[in-house]
Image (cartoon, rainbow, N blue to C red; front, side, top):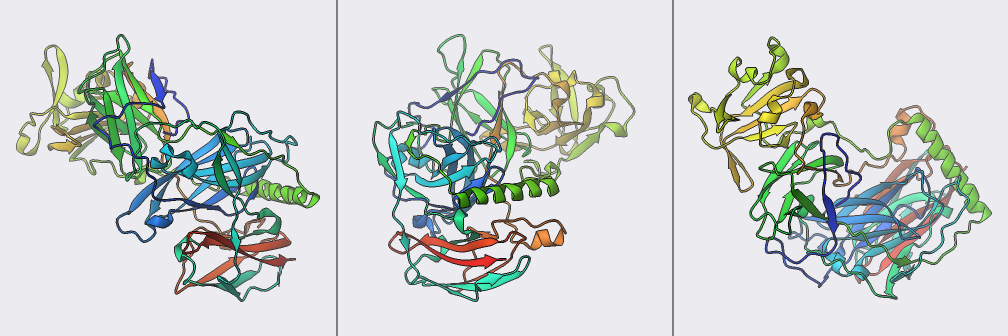
Length: 559
């Protein structure tokens, strides 16, 4: 689980522990130690400055064109030479092919960095991860990173074949002028190479180096023995709920997991040991996740098991030294980032989507009461007695409850699912204490609804004006986390969008495609040169049918 922060004023107390070791539970898949596949990881280049975007091509060769492997999920971590994880993403592979992006933080120091890629199942064998090496330069920081201590895995540059026999380039000139169009073709030897493994980039010549790493065990490896399994859905949560006042777990406790920005929720029941498992469809970008129980219990604590690897004990004993040409390249790249930042307010990676375009998990409500369409009433409860909205309040054991009435005003005798801003709370009394002026509308589903293994007598959802719960006070047992879901990949601009925007073109990566279109072994490459004059190199990378990585380069000038 990729946690960025835990913070919400309306939650008074949070108990959260990340477990690295748990005992297997019958709710989950059996643990496996046999890894029968590998990951091929490539980046658009190997030399970056802070503020740039790292483009990644991620391939599982054994799953290419495998109809039985529709979806797979890969984690990628950006790790400093000191062994600190700086950024993490999760990306979806379709039939073995995927791509991802890291926006390099401006706070990083200059030095060598590692990108590793792995599946959840691979965590039982850390030597099976894929690794590449990058150099990241911060021109405001002249320090270098020293190697950490107590590493257990040594990383070194792997041998890789340069093979010009597999690649034929037609139509690429030796020299181009700035802001001109480049159009050429690349012919692959499809008898020897796997076409779907190929990636293509056009970058400054000095920004390319062979950066594939091989791993060697040099000490004891700390294995995360969390239950390991192949993931087939975008969001997977494994956790345990127990009582803070004793060692007792919550046996057969109903748990609600709501993803607010995605307007979806799921419910499960914990097993006899208090563990529960939730999976949801593909969700992108960062959202708040709310975990609650079906009854208010201030003594509950939730243990969440991380789904990404938190260990990073690697030995990459290198001292960062730049030639004068490389220093000039770093300055050139930094100037490009500064100009792009001045003209483009949005980051290279889209980090949010318009929530209005996201359809709620229950699709369209059967009835909607918009508060401002009616005269002001002093309390929310009066909008149930004075306004027909498909639901009615009643008292049961001195507690206010709600019943939804379906077709022909026939009551639904199961309790409804009660929500506020798409978060399940399952208790209407605290919501009724909110000022009506904070509520935008009340949406009601007036039919029985099946959610996971639970049945409800409809759904009633209170939507606040500012999507901030309107001052609703959650129970102490509530848990709110910020979670980075799947990496949203923004297609690379090969020079045509920036031309239309009439802004300065200072791109230094002229072309990047982690999965180019290949027709009968031939690729058509088309892009525009920028205002940056330097020597560029075409880089084609892939794997051959024996599983060996290869690369091909060809230089040209822009001046």
